[in-house]
Length: 156
Image 1 (cartoon, rainbow, N blue to C red):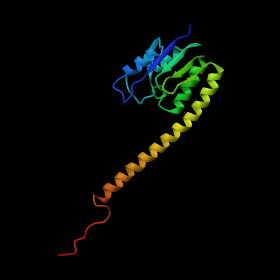
Image 2: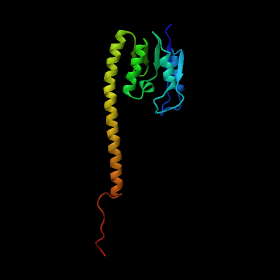
Image 3: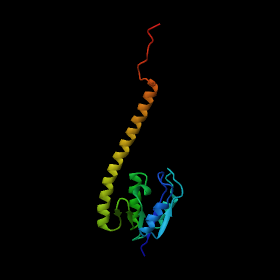
Image 4: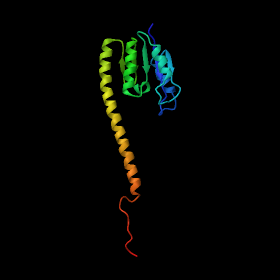
């Protein structure tokens, strides 16, 4: 029998995973897999358990794609595993369903490919902006509070 399994991961912008859990339960999640720690590490045991527990016809339910994966590449690997297991992914925020049904898979994967290009562009742009901002701040500190011009006292 097909099951709906929810996955939650803490966000640095939310106080806890409570709101995510409520949304997933309201959307029909029968079983929840919860990461306990907010971490930049690749090891996420709850996600591994969720993926390992997926069978044909099951659905992995997430509030948002950013709660499932940190990068577009990671998202594609996770999607590939979900589809290989005959299951589906449903992301509520994006309204995206990618899965075992051929129509869903082709349309969803095309959307994911396009979304990945946009996300990568945004990430590169943000990193460039951040780097320029840091370099500008360093340059202003080196010049001092009054800029590059130094006051010379000619009257003595």
